[in-house]
Amino acid sequence: MATPLDQASNAGTTPVREGHRFDEAALARWMAAEVEGFAGPLVVEQFKGGQSNPTYRLSTPKRRYVLRRKPPGPLLKGAHDVLREARVLRALAGSHVPVAAVVGVCADEAVIGSPFYVMDLVEGRIFWDATFSDVPVMERSAYFHAMNATIATLHQLDPAVIGLADYGKPGNYFARQIGRWTRQYLDDIDAGRDADMDALVAWLPAHIPEGDETRLVHGDFRCDNLIFHPSEPRIVAVLDWELSTLGHPLADFAYHALMYRMPPDIVAGLGGADIAVLGIPDEQAYVAAYCARTGRAGLPDYDFYVAFNFFRLAAIFHGIKGRVIRGTAASAHARERAASFPRLARLARAAMEACQ
Image 1 (cartoon, helix red, strand yellow):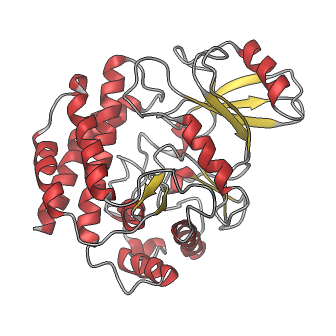
Image 2 (cartoon, rainbow, N blue to C red):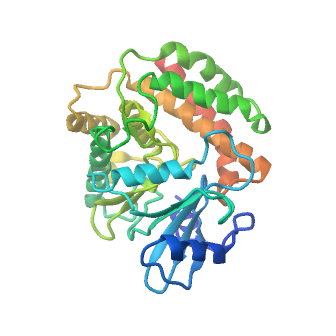
């Protein structure tokens, strides 16, 4: 099924888009001074996918890199912190969570107009379709096994051991996140208000489950933020750590598991798909596998985690809508995602009502 977010429209690169250009000669000078082994000439292209922070492929005769930078224009406080992304990537280097190696970080806006970091380009496959339609049916369960194992491994890391004890505030994750996304939703006047979102803003704070845990969470763990080995069902790099923080691991896992309920024309999802025919483990089995890997008897508050994550994603899409209106959205697909916001808000409200 072709969607606005399919492989053809996201994969690969394009010439740097208007509004995201910068002084490439200045970047080359910086890399010559700061990146070990760099040797030009440098060719810069922009990746089609990755709509939040502009992302570029940097090619030289002997090596290729990826650059991530803040988008231009006015930004919401705390958003698009690429230096924070670089920190978590460096902290995870050498762990059992695969990430690209960061080779340089620049906080000086004078170089290309905004802070940025440069990492090695990791070769492999990104699946924009959650059915893994490019993979033979008999092999698909192994790819889901790899995703499940990777997020479980992430949630078993001790943040203090990898130098991230201060990467976020411990405890009260749901209250803080609901407050954060509520403020972002309410503050983005350009994007407007929505009755479904207003209902969630009122309901969620009063229904937070008891108990709390703190681990490093990715915040956007989906198949299209993973690079798989060129030919094996193995993840070689987890991408896009912009939303990572110290938080509740079950919120992070439930966001990942939204793929089972997500219509594929919004983001990579399995909504409406015949799971058995596709050779993919069902949602119940997937949750059970995560519980087994993390030593849990079950997830009794799973429905709340689902409602919270639909709300959170709706708030993110609301922010994309605001950036489209202001003309600062990084991706060519931002308008399509902005247009999906009302539908996603309705899904969030439906999930909320299912909890009642």
